[in-house]
Amino acid sequence: MGTEQAAFLERAIEQYGNATYTFAFRLTHNEADARDLTQEAFLRVYRAWQSFKPGTSFLSWIYRIVTNLHRDELRRRKGRYLEEIPEDHDTHYFGGERPLAVAPIDDYVESQFSEPLARALDELGAEQRQIILLADVEGFSYQEIAGIIGCSVGTVRSRLHRTRGLLRRLVSAQMSSRR
Amino acid sequence: MNDRHLTPDEIVDYLHGELPITRDAAVAMHLAQCRTCAEAREAEAALTEMVRAVAQKQERTVPSAMMSSIRAAAERPPQRASRPFWFARPLVALPVALAAGLAIWLGMRSFTVNPPKPSIAAGYLVDRHAITSAIAPFADDAPIPPVFASDNAPR
Image 1 (cartoon, rainbow over the protein chains, first blue to last red):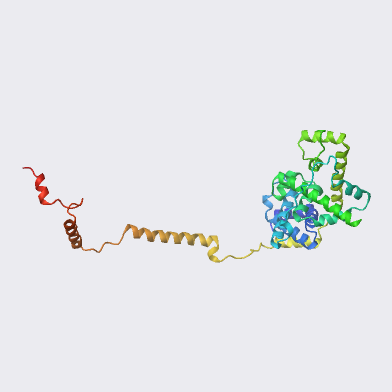
Image 2: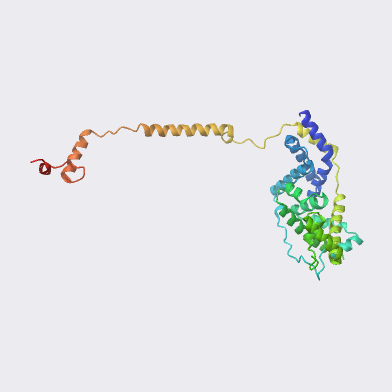
């Protein structure tokens, strides 16, 4: 192992190991898969360390690697990654109609909401979970997300809108079933 | 702006800071005046907060064993997934293909530059000419019979 290359790896693991592992776990919901993804991602980083451009976001880079590895793995397993995201053709205007989110979300604030939401997140496909994680949890911009998952900003935008709409419906369903 | 309510998509883009600056200002102004849209904004913001809260419970710390195995894997030379057949490897396949192409080209060239010589005897050509002249005496390539040739002769 070259000294500089080894130092780069050490620094990367030290600074971004936890974040990467957490991101991988949130994507997969599985410890073993998250470990494999994280390990493989850092190996890729190690091998391609010279292609990293100083001044750019390391986190975006390694998340892109994790995302690609995860997608490849799911394709290999022919999992639910390629599932279509249901189109959200419901009304977008709610003058006179309340948005689906309002009533259940108010309930969550007043009561225990994390369990139904966690279940709803579990029900999302990998691609959908990915967009929610990157936009809402990690707080990346649409432009950054487009770079990470390799699509256009418009796709990020529409995918996020659809996924949030779906999440609202799933949470509503979870809440209804609890009552 | 005030004649219609905001769409959930606009509110999501607004919360993510993804609206163009002029639109962002207009949305902010609308939210300050419209209770319905302000509630919808609160609901979207609450959804984001809850997603974050759930995600926070999933935070992980890299186990030291995993760090060791990453280091160990990095020290090992990368393994090749599978060795292709020798003729499919580019370093071998390319020269072989070039040599084969050259051999074919040279073979064809020698065939066309030095075609095999005809083995027909000259006597055959003479006989064939005589036969043709007898059958079609007025053909373009037929020799002029002496009777016509004499007409053209100077008198």
